[in-house]
Image (cartoon, rainbow, N blue to C red):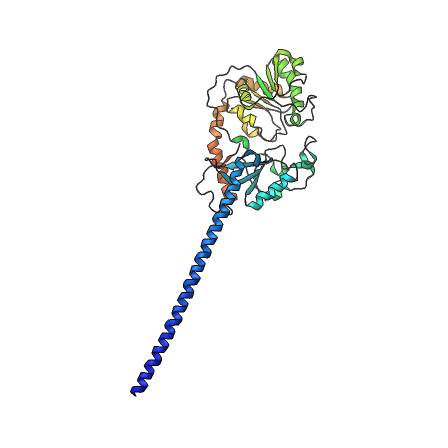
Length: 379
């Protein structure tokens, strides 16, 4: 009996030893597996870190002008760190530009569109001053690009559909009022800006079409001869204007940015006969200086800036007299600058752009914008 008991104890002890060895071995395997997982996770984190650093280096390269390409615009936060957004603002002019679009997409950059160039993205409305590639390339902008800053009244006319996420934001919204308090003498009753295309001053040149030089020529006799206004024409030297209007019209060549801003200060109004111009920034640059605008009501974009406080609309040489009279009579009663300060500013527009982009690209930002509340253009 005693022998049987000892034998049973011996068997139990052997079984316990075997179980302990099995458990120990399994624990070693588990520890080994866990260590391997930790090593693998560390390697993955290092890879992610390296990839993020490589991506960020790619983004920051856009600070250099030679790394930026038309028709793209690039964006930063308020500390000038480049953000993962690129905007297409006009038609591709060659395969290099189109390939750059696909490069941005493949790199993981969030690409959206801006209606900042003529009828873009509708190439059917382009005139002959545009290149053959722009007019015939089959890239479908509104199908390939879902999200848009759009300034058009009837966006369906320009190729947009319910597929597109559209918000009313223009590049020309991003201005603060001019607080320099410059007291320039008003030398000119109006200023008109239309850089020259060539010495022959063709009416079908790129600038002439964009700034509607043809209509301007029809309006000048009314403005200068009938209303006795003194004008400044920027960019149209040797186009016959000097001889025709003499001392009542000053004509200059192209002006650098700062000189042009001074000339705006010296003008009582901005004359904008433009139609095929998607929200020209000169409109905003004048309004923030308290200079009202006489604007063609058929302009593609920019119409949203004109109201009682900021100017008047006209459509042709037949109705300009009425509009011009109304604007002249209210000059001392209106404040374009005050209206702008109540509706636009850099800070307001930076936040509006940030909110829009973080909403439409929320599934691909991965927390990238969590601590960023403003987005601005790289100028």
